[in-house]
Image (cartoon, rainbow, N blue to C red):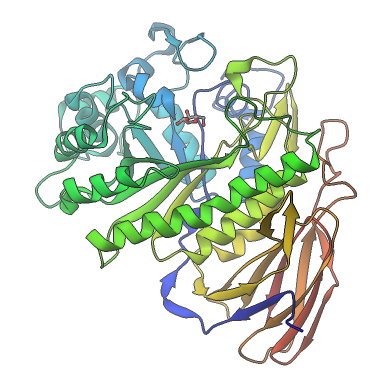
Length: 495
Ligand code: AHR
């Protein structure tokens, strides 16, 4: 009989790097992501901070080696006028955060605060420009303000505001969700808008080396990607975005912790959909860009559920369980496996919003199961892709099937091979034969699972879900057998 689970590794592709930028994050002015999450204000006497940025958060995010951080939105980006967020804080204007709860935004966290915070985190900033309600000149000025080294009106203003050297920001989003909150545009119209904005963000040769990312498709809107690839000259285009959330039904998203077995299946179905999306958007991009110069940037992904009862519906605050660990494990394996085209991605969102890696409550902080998956998977950052083929047992529900097992592998510069394996099955363990393609001497691993699929880390019990050592792998030269518990993530290191 055919084996249920078989993972086969091919030789490493030294020409395909799993970009560390696949492990990027996203911080929007939304709910308690920036305020309360990252930033508690310079005057805060209760929570230890550096220039208003929480020290506990900085330490935690450093453990993830986060490669980039997208800001200030999301939908907020197309309402944001960056000049409101510079200069003396007591003179900054307030605005209304129209998309997210209608709260008053006092602009106390602005460009300097964000870019200095990125330096503190050791991460590259990814600024999302306002295209829908801003002006071309405004975005061009922002590029000059943060990147120009010589004398110029914007560089002079930056220096007046206390920053001598430019930050040299490489990654720039040209609007966000232009098909929706970013202006409700058609792809044809947006492609023309993009051309105008992108033109004034650089010079003839893009000597500043800006990496411009076009606002991309909503999930399976393939016409969107096709139109951008066709209508935008590739000299103006370094990346095309894609947004896809693991959501059951936008009008009935279900609870974050007390989901039914059926809701678990539906969420995982939506997470697995990423495989098809990335494959098909890539195929379209290959048609117009066979050299793969333009990156596919999945700059919003993650699970989206109903908000926690009693919290502001506009703040998108949700708990994070082993289901989220499954989404993260499967999705990151998909990105790794498509690393030739997917060269950047951003989990939505870092703190207190959607599939967060960190939750805070006053001075308390908790690391979610998703945090631990990101930490375990960081071994893939900038490693050479090892292509895998996966034959998997199925998870079935009402006649529908999903693969239970997901895998990806890479070879790092120190001579280690890492294999990440996920079993999304809620009740069945998986015995997997891994054909390694070459002999190894040793294997060690780490495991993330819990006593309950719905387990999560709370402020009272922050270590309910944490990685442990893993003893379930048996190595015999080029063959490995692995026993994966139900709903688990395992990362193996082979030497
Ligand atoms: O991440 C929350 C929101 O989801 C973002 O602001 C928007 O881009 C998307 O619709």
